[in-house]
Image (cartoon, rainbow, N blue to C red; front, side, top):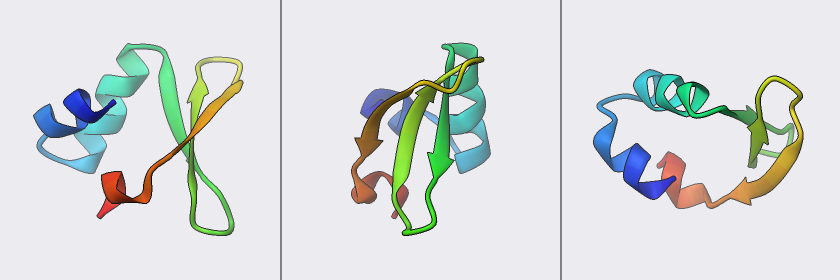
Length: 53
C-alpha cells in the first residue's frame, strides 16, 4: 500500500492503481478509511491516517 501511494502522483491515480490490483478505499462517516476488495467489497483492514495527509 505504502509503495503504491509513494509512486502515485495524485489521490485519483492511487485509487486507480489500487483498482487495477483489485482493491478500493472506502471512507467511513467517522473519518477513517477501509481497504476493500473489488468487486465484492470485503473489508480487509483499516488504513493509517498518515497515508491521507
